[in-house]
Image (tube, rainbow, N blue to C red; front, side, top):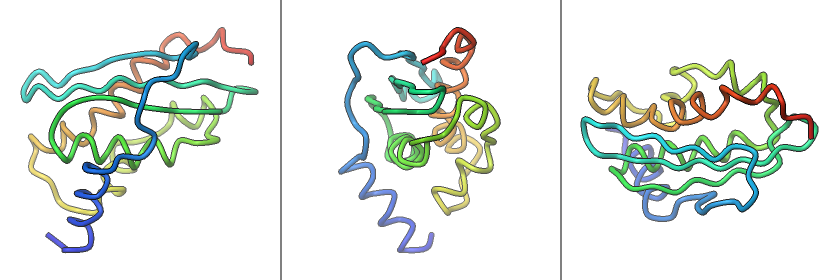
Length: 126
C-alpha cells in the first residue's frame, strides 16, 4: 500500500471530516454492513436540490469511516441527480488503494447508505 494513501486513510479515520448528526435533516438514514458490523448514519440537508450540509456518524473499520469522511467532503454542493449517479469506482478512487472484496464492501458502505436515503427525495423542493 502506498504510504501516502495509508496516511490519508488513517487521518480520515482518526480525524473524520463532516462528523456528527444534523437536526431537521432532509435525509436521515442508517445502514450497516452485516458481514463486519460497520455502521454509518448519514444526514443531509438540501437547498435548491443541492447538498447544503452533510454529516455522518458511525462505527467501524478505518476503511468504512475514512471512505465516509472523504466522500461526504466531496458531496458538498452536489445535486440530488449527481448524487444518484455516483459510482462504486468514484468512491474507491477516493481511497486510492486496492482492496480485497470484503474491504470493498466496507468502502462502499457510505454509497449504499446514500442510495438508501435517496429513494424518497422526489419531494425535496428546497
